Image 1 (cartoon, rainbow, N blue to C red):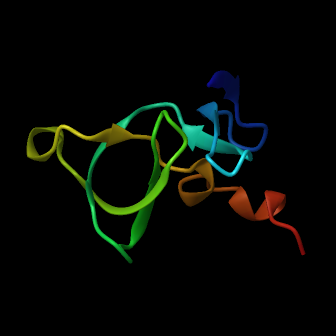
Image 2 (tube, one colour; image 1 turned 90 degrees about the horizontal axis):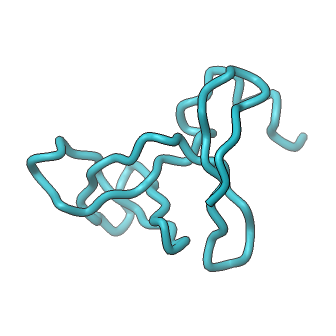
Length: 82
């Protein structure tokens, strides 16, 4: 994982290599989650697994991962391919 700053919004991000070998920008702050196949959110683990989930409060789960930054960046559209 490499730390950086989002060029669009200035937020701290981590670059995590997924199991597919792609680098994914993620929010730097880890989040607690509960796995949920087909769930509304995605989480990326430190090992590079991308998991469908529900984000929960820290006391509700001991699983931690990182939210893909495209889900929270207010300027994400500027990076999307057309």
